[in-house]
Structures are given as C-alpha cells and as structure tokens.
Image (tube, rainbow, N blue to C red; front, side, top):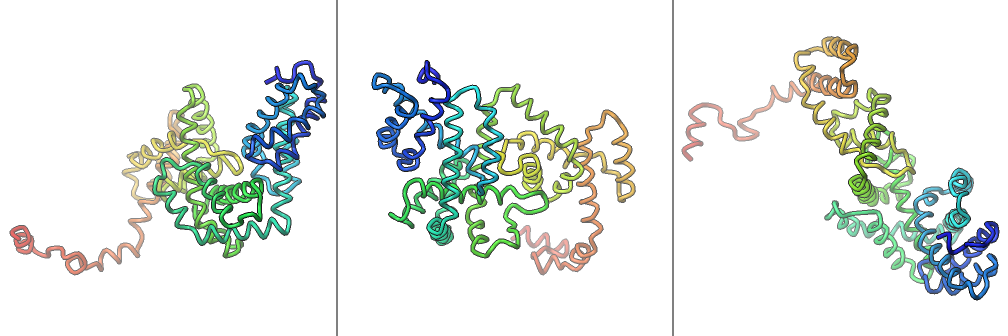
Length: 381
C-alpha cells in the first residue's frame, strides 16, 4: 500500500485522501463513478502528476474498499457527534504509522458524521420512520431468516433491511442514505440485545415507545443470532495460542465476577451465557465466542455432586465456605454448583409446587392407571 505514496509528503497524502470524501458520499457503492470523481480530486490535493495516475487510482480503490468496513467496525455504533469525536480521537494514535491509514480513518469518521447529520435531519427522521414501519409490517421476512440460524450473519440481515428500505423509500433516498438507515437499525438491535445482566434477551425497557418495542421484537433475535454466529466463526479460525489467551481472559473475568453471574445459571445455559457476554463485551464491543468454554463449565457444575448431601441452606453455606478455603478448589465451579444446589433446594421447599403435586389427580389428568389391575388391562389392550 505504501508504494502508492512513495516519495510524497505525509501531509499531502492525508490531504489527498481527505479530498475523496465528497465523491465517496455521492457515489457510495458505485466504484466506477467514485473512481472517476475521486481520482482527480486526490491527484490535485496530493500533488500527483498525470504520470502517477495509476498510483492515484490504486489509492482511490483502496479507500473505496476499506473505508466502509472501517466505518462499520469502528464508528457506526455512535449516534451523536460528541461521542463520535471522542472515539475518533482515541483511534488516531493507532494510525500514525501510515498517512493512508490516517486518511482512511478520517474518512470513516466523516462518513459516520454525515450519517448522524442525515438521521437527525427532518428528511432523515421521516425516511427512517417509514422503514421502521415497513420492518414491523414485514416481520415474516425476518422470521424466515431464522429458519436457517446456523448460516445467519449480520451481512444477511443488513441486506434484507437495505432491500426493504429501498422498496419503501424508492427515489427518496440515495445509496448512502439507505445504508445509513439499515446500519442504524442493526446497531439499534445490537445495542438492545446486549442488555446488562438481569434482563432477558427479549425484555424491552419500559421507557421505549411502543413502535420501537415492536421493532425490537422483530430485529433483536436475528441480529443477536447473527452476531453470535460471526463470533463462533472467528473463534474457530483462531490459532491455539489465541484461543488460550481468550480462555485466560474469561477465567480472570469469572474469578472477579463469578459470584454475581452465577445467579443466572439456574435460569438455563442461554441466560447464563448472555449474562456473561453482556458484562464481558459491553456494547459496542463485538461479541467473542466464549461459549466453547462456558458450556463444559456449566455442564460440569450442573452435574457436580459436591453439595449432594447438603439438605439445608446452612449446610450448603458451610460446605461452600469449606471448599472456598481449600486452595485447590475451582472457585468458579463452586459458585455455579452452589447456586444449582440452592435452586434445587428452593424447588423442593416451594409450598406451591408441593400443593400442586399433592392435589394432582394423575388418573384424571393423564389417564394413568390407579391399580395393578388397570395396568394389566392397559398392557393387554
């Protein structure tokens, strides 16, 4: 990449890349038109001669490919200019080794700035409202996506949203505006799916307007499934050393937060995993696939016999304190096993369940045989 700018000053190269912004916004997703409009602008700002046009075209092509990805990954989650500016400032030091990287980062930042301006404009708000209604009306399309959950990814969900926006708005919005609306809906669903521990995945905060509640009921599940799938695929491409690093990160995290997160374990593995993910990877951080480690931990704790002879809360507490005092004990496993033991104890002690069981007429409800003679009669039938 650096061969394209060899012999040019860093300042001029950055100015040249920044000069690509108008063409990028106007010809979003149209590489040929962007190249025609952007290359001359880059050449003038960066001081390229006609003999260097091939290099200038290569720079424009790199910008066309990399800036949208950089925008999606680093800046799209931000919905106000101040937070966006802060995010950009944090990332600038990581790009100082290359003027092209600095320029591309600035372009991605400006793309999201333009997106925010559009979404906050009267026209943008009206267009987005139309698309949100279309999503609610077309919920069957998103249910179809879940028919093949293992192959679902965020790109597929976004393509469906983009196509729906295009059908809804027609010529009211250009390619860039359509992508902005679709991307904003993706981030809206990602943000709500990554709720803090204590809320169900599909539990909608009470202060959200009814139309947004309906929107989330359509989008949250496919977006969350897609994000988990992408995390899964990334994980299994990692080398063993990198997988070991993630395991160590998870281990240290659970050692610090295991007691708080263990309370979600009796609610089922999905709930427990969501609680861990929400704390370990708060939005807008991408999800990482920790379930490869969480599943065996969860299963082992669920099947653990360390509290089997503890029939009261006091005995569970005594056993728990003794195990924690032993240096060789697995603290995370103990926390999970303890909450499973307490949950099982509470089930047995629940008077409502006992009354239900005692009052249940199995013969009437399930046609169960009441006598040995009834059993023999059913066996002969």
